[in-house]
Structure formats: C-alpha cells, structure tokens
Length: 275
Length: 291
Image (cartoon, rainbow over all chains, first blue to last red):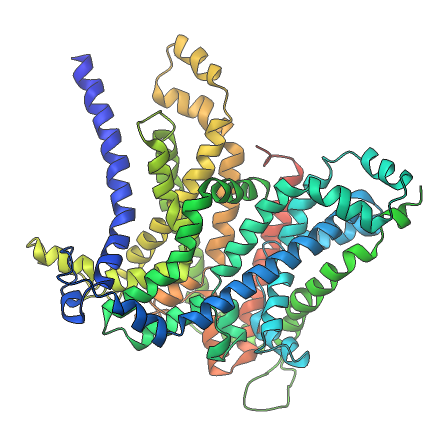
C-alpha cells in the first residue's frame, strides 16, 4: 500500500517535470518544423513533418531580412560594448573599492543608484542629437557602455574587496606603476567576476530591443532583434519565412547555450545573487 | 605609500563621464522637460508647470489606467512565476533521474530575448492561423479556441502565460541555487523529530531561502515596472488601449511627438523606481542578499 502511494507520488513528480519540459520545447519544435515547409503546408500549422524540406526558406529569410548585416551589427555592439565596459568598470571599481575617501563613497552610491533606474529615452535622444551620436554605431555602443556602468561597477566592487591589499603594495615595491599594477596583477585575479559580468552584459545587449528602437532608425544599423521584428511585420502571412527568420535569430544564442551552458547559467545566477 | 599615485582617480573617469552624460543627464533633463510643452512640431519649448502631470492624473481612465496596468502586471506576473518556480525548484532538487536536463530545458527560454519570445507566441496564439487554436480544432476542442491576444477577456491571462513561460525557469534556477546552500542536516534533524513536508517547508526551507526570495522579488519588481518588449510585441497595448503599460505609453507619446507628456511619464516611473532603489540598497546593506 505504502509502496503504491510512494510509486504514484514519484510518477506524478516525473509527470510534472516531463510535461513542463514539453511545454517549453513544443513551441520550438513547431517553429523549426514549419520553417522547413512550403507556405501552404505551414498554413496548416500542425506537427506533421514537411513533405519536402524547404531549406531555401532560410536563404530567402536571411536575404530579405538582411540577417547578415544585422547579425554583424548585433555582434559588433555586444562584443565592443561588453569588452570596453568590462575594462572601464573594473578600473573604476578597483579605485573606488581601494581608495575609500568620502568622495569615492559618494561616487559609488551615486553610480549604484542607477542599477534599477530606467533611462529617459526621449530626453536621451535629445542629448545624443546634441553630441551627434544619434543613428550611429558609436552612439549605441557608448549608450550600452553607459547603461552597464552601474551594474558592472557594483558587482566588481564587491569582488575587489576579496583581493588582498598586500598584493598592491608588493607590486608597487617591485616598481610597478598603477597601470601595471592594475592590468598585470589585479585584472587577471578579477577573472571569475569579469566572466559573470561579461556574460550578463553580452546577453543583455544581444537581446535588447528598446534602445535600438529609439535611437537607430536606419535599417542598415539595426541589430537582429529589430530586424526580426520588422521582418515579422512585413511577412506575417508567410509563417514559413517568419519562422526561418526566428530560427536564425535564436541559433547563435542556442549554440552558445549548448557550448557554455554551465558558464552562462552560473554567470546569470551569480549575477543575480550578487546584484 | 601615496594612495593617489597607486589608485589614480582618473581610473574612475571614463565610466563616470559616460554614466553622467548618457544616463544621469537625460534623466534630469527629462524631469525639466516634463514641465514643458516640448513637442516635435515647434522649436520653441515653453515652461507650462505641472500641466503634463495634470493631464496624466486627471485624464479619466487613460494614462491613469496605464499606471494601474503596470502595477497589476508587476504583481500578478510575479505571483504566477515565483510560487510555481519555488515548487519546481523543490521538485528538481529531489534527485529525480535526469533532473539536470529538466533544469536546462526549463531555463533555456530565459536566454532568449523577450522580443523573440513575443514573436513566437504572437504566431502561436494567432486567432485563425496560430498553432494553439489549430491544435484545439484538430482535437475537436474548437470551442476552447479563443482570440487569445485580441479578446479583452483573455489578453491579460495570455500575456501572463507567455511571461511565465519565459521567466519561471530563471526564477526556479535562483531558488535551486538557494536550496543547494541549505545544509542537509537541518532536514535530517527535522525528520528525526517527525516533521512532515509542510512543516519542513515552513520552518526550514522558507526561512533559509530568504535571500533567494528577496532577489527574486527585487528582480521581479524591477522587471515588472519597466516591462516593455513583451507587451509591445504581443499586443502593442491593445485591444484598444487595454494592455498599455507605462513604457509602451512613453513610446507612443514619442511616436506621436508629444515629448512633454512622454518625459512626464518617464519621470513618474523614474521616481517610483528611485524610491524602490533606495529601499533596496538599504536591504542590501543589511547583508541579507548574500548567499
């Protein structure tokens, strides 16, 4: 009797885990499956396999959706902004955490306050117009670096405290100047936290939609999110093409997830825990 | 040793300048503009006092509704994610076979952009050609097919469902990290004393999970109040203006060229989030959030 009860309990647990996983997977199956069908077949929107695999859907979607350009843009914005922000934020966090003058404590609080605050995009556009940064690649990269300052410094600041000060003193006695001290001694030691910050910053930028929507209105500058949104609007009648476009947009993230799942999950969670 | 020489203030400069120019300055300029009639059609900006705020708070059910919708979304979307996520986290730390695979699958949507997820579900939930309704019809359950994103009765539940589909796995993963830091012997001791599942949940798990719960609440609060992508893509505020939230309303004002009202809405959000931030920093200084 007890065994039956326990058995059915275990069964229910597996059932829940299995059912929820299916709920997550099915939309992806539908999308991949229908992306390989003809328009007529895709209109039926069922789970039957395509009669002929229409690989050319991908070619058409990538061409008409200008996925090459937008992939390049996304990559450029995410890589450059992430790299620069990791470097400048760790430099700033290092000095703020090491030299705790009154000014620096105030600066730190002033910076950290920005973590949760929303940008005022309408006024931001005005500022970017004045600086001639609107509708430029440099502009959006600088914007991404600026919006990641608070979060980056906050997380790295905590970690700098765990690196013993004696290292600084030893390096200085050995004749290192502050640049050498930072880049040769401290920066390598910050690696674990920089991976966390890097992963989070990269994903945040890669997935961002709001900033380019406001500050980039030239299609040639659009990242993937904006390009796929626009494609969806234009081809809503042709699900096969729309789905091919969505698959191509998700693919890079999916591949990175498969390769570095542990890195990404722990990065995103560590960020959460520290945030 | 000379502190200023080893730790030069100039290291802070680049980050600080970018932060001030592209984040702080727009926020404060926005506060100024919110008291003006700034718009796309004239070059002259006139100071008009609290007119824009009057428009927002006395417009009987339009702007007022968007603020209400934002708060409603924040509360409900978090309830439907956090509670199931907690039980899922408990379920997936019980040594089920293949639990790592379940965890990885459930977490996966969290790495995709809200935009892509919104597009996926705009197609899934399409009233005539969407997968959900087509499947219901095929199973002869056609009466259950709804205009998920256009029927006023179903649009909010559909948004919550899509949001939960994306976010529950992430919340769950934070809970799992928290659960794994609870020492096993607490439970062993409780079992010897004859505690059942709910007693263990209330007396050990929940108190020990407080840091993880705090993080999820702070995240959820920030996300909910700032929500934009998923609603913009799924409904664009519709049907009518039924699902309009603050951030989609700001974009609409921007598109219309009524920048004064837009910056006023931004400022309202900014002030609310500012109060929450100060409160949060207070909480964090009490060291509650260290796992």
